[in-house]
Length: 296
Image (cartoon, rainbow, N blue to C red; front, side, top):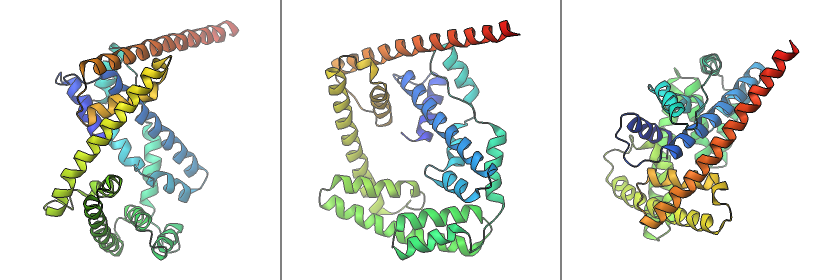
């Protein structure tokens, strides 16, 4: 489930049209993504403040791109979602600091020259014929030197080349019943669906890709259910419980009544553990606050 789809699910819950979406799984996944992104943001800012702009750019430009992730997760109704989670005792996501976001934005206003390490990385990737790496780096250069027409042309040229290769590889993998190859190459192509609009080969392969991805998600969910059933304490397998809910919602998977009831039981057990942990943390914070007041 990408962040855009996750936000759509959140907005459907807020509007009352969420259907049978697992609110706890959605809230957990959103909190996890916000926490991971916040950690990257803080790391990036610390590098900038230490004068390590290149290292900061590497962090910011690692997929998923930092600023893009922040924009996707900072949706219009984020405050309403926070209030909803608090009222339902659902996991609450951390906020992003506007000042820190501005500091990262400043990286993209300075421009770079041919002597910059990013250009070195690009030339090296091209020498090694590492198309994925080369495309990622030239895209980073394009984002920093946004007014450089030559960089834009180079990016477009390389992207066209990459799309042709990945599309051909995906079609070949489909013909050879290599499902992992189809998933690998189509996942590369998916971010460029706009550039591929109207491409009949992509239309055909993407339909098969969705079927294969759904099949893979069903298999993974089956593995999770088996693992939960074999565990003495299935409620402690929080990552697996979360993954199941995300896969189910993102791929619109359906399960037997028995499997659905078992998953709900595990999710409720996890909710009880989290509420207990939240109570312990609240009690500890109150105790610490009291200690500070007593010391004063």
